[in-house]
Image (cartoon, rainbow, N blue to C red; front, side, top):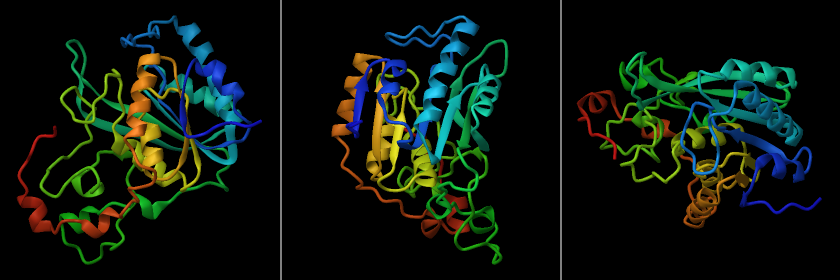
Length: 290
């Protein structure tokens, strides 16, 4: 079966995924609708609970079929269905490596419960003994380095924890030295990165995932491409990519974003080498993100 990669396909993933060859994907990232009433332009995010879970099982089976024996699967999901998804993915035979909590600012404002300011990122692999994990590509300065000037600090930095609160020194590509940005916020309406999609993932989150768990030339698949962030991150770092998006309007926006990105022009430079000295880190002024 011949498949053309490095593109966005407009259509229903339940129709398009079966057309892809078995065992083709090195990494699949899925940020499906949460079924909590988001206003998409063509998708109904208010399905019955059973209908939603039946639909989830169908596309999850396709994802598992597409993965290589050395491949991995990342799922972004909210509180309402994370347990149900985990049970189903476990039953499909994948192995959980990390349950990451991404904490963001500009969370959803609530009036009768605590504000929502996190999402779950479930990291699964097909085989715990055969996997890709590029630790050096995502190391970050430790508190021993940035705060305490402790000589015992590993000069190579540390691996990120499983609660992702990205700090300025952790991503020089996204956080300049003159900015004091302590969390990766959601991509809000005033942000330069923003598209028209209502649930846009930040590029920094996808780049960490792609850098850590895939290699240049690997195939990255996103069955719910949305704003196209997964595909943009893959292209920026020299990965092949394939995405599916139900909405013709969103798919057109993704195509525009991809055309504006050059292939593999942003190789990752370890943030550790650019870590600010402790005194400088304490003296930086807070500057709001835009």
